[in-house]
Image 1: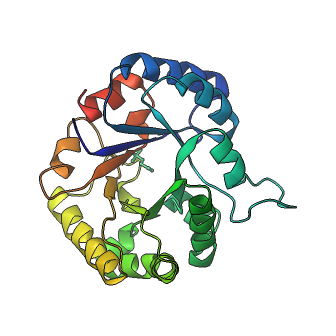
Image 2 (image 1 turned 90 degrees about the vertical axis):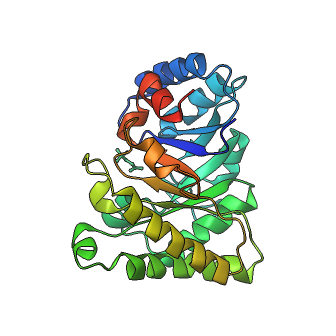
Length: 244
Ligand code: PGA
């Protein structure tokens, strides 16, 4: 049985009707699955997908969470409610949210705190843009992105964070990061986590993952899992990555 973690990020790509249909396809294909496969639908589809996943080995994830528990926060979704629908993972600080919605490190640390308060595993996304990559600045960019969250976690004795390395230029472009280069970044992340007192932090790769390149990131000593966007929108293509 694979110990790797596979997370499907459906973003805002499917209508609720399409999401429910796709969720049913996933349940059929993953019927006897024994590993960790997580699906993050949009919020409108989340409760319907939760029902469909009830007796399946598939786990539910969310694409975001509010930084506050409850109150006058128009448009936000509470970790309390995600937990009530059996949400087990939540993406925090996806680059699309960092860039389009100006999410900053302080806010992301608060979201991590909220997720953990409800025993939902936060998956903190980090990654450099194309210009930073060209200048070889990926390590310093990632250091900065991780700093706020890691300080919070080590101050509070938290151990249950996941990190997804997703170079922005690789997301949705068909240009995945060369696995050797990605693994160097993974080692940097691992060192930073160790220095912050975190012992076991699963580190995932994301960015144009397909069935053709997935195995290159999952070699021994490689990544602990994958975060998959485009190739996770169909049960069969996700299955080919997970290699059922
Ligand atoms: P992609 O998206 O697999 O379509 O590149 C990954 C992500 O944004 O999580």
